[in-house]
Amino acid sequence: AQSVTQPDIHITVSEGASLELRCNYSYGATPYLFWYVQSPGQGLQLLLKYFSGDTLVQGIKGFEAEFKRSQSSFNLRKPSVHWSDAAEYFCAVNGAGSYQLTFGKGTKLSVIP
Amino acid sequence: NAGVTQTPKFQVLKTGQSMTLQCAQDMNHNSMYWYRQDPGMGLRLIYYSASEGTTDKGEVPNGYNVSRLNKREFSLRLESAAPSQTSVYFCATRNDRGRQETQYFGPGTRLLVL
Image (spheres, each protein chain N blue to C red):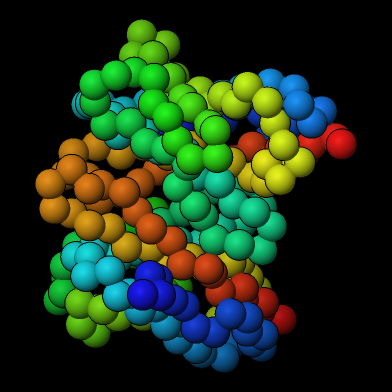
């Protein structure tokens, strides 16, 4: 069975500081990995995705993520956080031909001005 | 081009009442999905439809039914609402051609069952 673990429920960072959100996955085949962001009261917006190839993927809003197969991880990073990045972030996994996208429980990011 | 739309945005029900949540997409995607989101639980798949005319259960299907009316529309029905079904419901679609495995989400329906 596929699963996603986001170990940090809530993270607080100062504006301008760097950010890393952790994601570990379990999947029996080659995974497709995603990061979504959800602002309060809104739907989910795709930040970035990894299917294959270069293990460092770039997304919108200055985010990037690195796929590390040996660690079953897909951590999200941003070099300098803005107050508008405060939101909840979800990591998700599925694979080729799979209809079921499995989400982690989310990490809430708070940004101190 | 509205993407994925959901109606209503917010609904209050009494225990035992029924209602249908509507989802429509103009993205010409084949597969559609219903999720529920509860605090601390992430998103959990209720039902999905790989194509028009087919539906399958997800992780938490009990208490729900779905209809894939046509390629554009996928509805979720609560026949007899329970307080445990208080949640935020999201519809999503996916383009299954090539390697377009990404799901796109609607804005959500917030449901309160008293």
